[in-house]
Structures are given as C-alpha cells and as structure tokens.
Image (tube, rainbow, N blue to C red; front, side, top):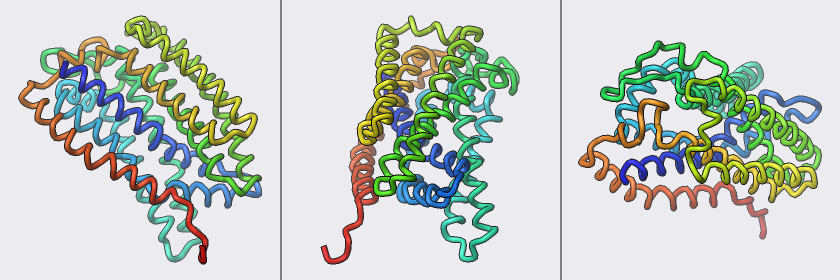
Length: 338
C-alpha cells in the first residue's frame, strides 16, 4: 500500500512537471530557433510568458528527487550512481538556464552580453530535457542492472545510457517539450496574428516530430533488455491510456489546424500528461527495471509514513500557493483608468 502511494505521488509530480516545466524548456528551444523578420517579437513573447513563474515549476522535480531519496533509497542510489553523467549535465543545464535568463533580463549594457546570455539560455533549454529523457530511457530500458539487496549498480557509468533507446527517448522528450511550448505560445500570442501564426506552424511541425519520434522510440524499445515497448501488457490500464493519448494528439492537431488555440492548449496538456501516465503504467511495478520494484526498494514504514504526513501538510500550503501564483502572474494587466 505504501509503495503504491509513493509511486502514485511520483507519477503525479512528473505529470505536473512535464505540463508546466516542460513548456518552459520548450520556450527556450523556440528562443534558440527564433528566425525571420519577427524573431525579436517571438523572443519577447517567450520572455514575457516564461518570466513570472518559470522557477516555481521546478518544485515538482524537487519533490520527485526527495521522494526517491527518502522513500526509495536503493533506487536513488542506483540511479544517481550509474547515471550521474547525464544527471550532472541536466543539473548544470538547469542552473545555466536559470542564471542566463536572469542575467539577460537585467544586464544594464545590452548588446553582445545579452546575446551571449540568450544563447546560453536557449542551448541549455535544449540540452536539459534531452538528458532528462536519456535518464528516463536508461531507467526503463533494463540496461541498468542493480543488486536488489543493496541498490549497488552492476554496470558501468556509460553502458546504461549510451545506447539507441535512451537517446531516442531524449529526442522524444525534447520534441514533446517544444510541441507543448509552441501550443501554449499560440494562446499567449493573442493580439499578434503574425507571431501566433508562426507558433501555430511550429506546433504542427513539432506534433509531427513527436509522432515520428514516438514510433522510432517504440521500435528501439523492442531491442532493449527489458523490451520496454512490449511491457504495455503489464498493466490493464496502459492500453486504454495509450489509445486516449493518440486520440488527444489527433484532436490537438485538429484544433491547431482550425485555430482553436484554447482547446489545443487544453488537449495538448492532456496528451502530454497521458504520455507520462502511460510511461508510469508501463514501468510499474518496477522503479528500476528489471531488478528493483517499488515494494522492494521501499524504505521502512517508520521513515515513509512521517514523510507522507509532512507531504500532506506541505501540499495544503503548496497547492493554494501555486493557484495564487498563476492567478496573479497570468492575469492580464488592467489598462489605466479602468
């Protein structure tokens, strides 16, 4: 029961991080790829949308790390030891991205310095989600073998993630975040038809890229030790979730094609959330396939139960705070005199 609850909380946190923080990373990707006569307006829109709340979205990733460390120490030890190279690159990317965004916004001189900070922000926004996907792919692939008794990795530092399947997952996550950001930016660009059309075309193109990479990743998964692509059969809910994901993807593309941007944003967020949910159902009951299950990696109840109580108390503060944060910073400013 405790293991299932911890797994569910981790999955919910990953969904929340993907649909919020993922779009922030995707915005940085489009900052990197901004082009044409409206590139300055595109980047200005991205900066305006990302600026107020981008840092707060990392709280969901922090929650996942804390849950692994406290509730699943064997899994935490295995993942952070065997995959410390991609995790380190991802961490450096998060730090550089945040620092560069702030320095770019407040640099008093402008010019070359701002362009350099912009490049650091954009490149790190692309590198970080790629290595996040690589890490997830390595955990799911079955190549990360672990001693179930101690959590000690039985493989080297390169073999689990320097492979076709983790790289495909990394590219898939990168495309997914770019797609989500482009859809969100279509809504945020209301009032600037030309920029809105730019992001509509990019959303459609990235939707096609997501589909192609999903198929590529599925095929690559057939060759992994855990045959990740075939483990959908493990959960009775996995197949309906993946069917719902496909339906959401088609509906999102239709909404973009017909310029129903509010609907597209809602459905695209649902699509991305369902992708993460499907991944979790595919992986369950393993936290590190095939050697560590959530039940086998769980810390003693004397540790997990107080942590869950603290999490419940913290959630009572965190969730209303997030609602307030979004309401304050996403509200359109009222013109003077109204």
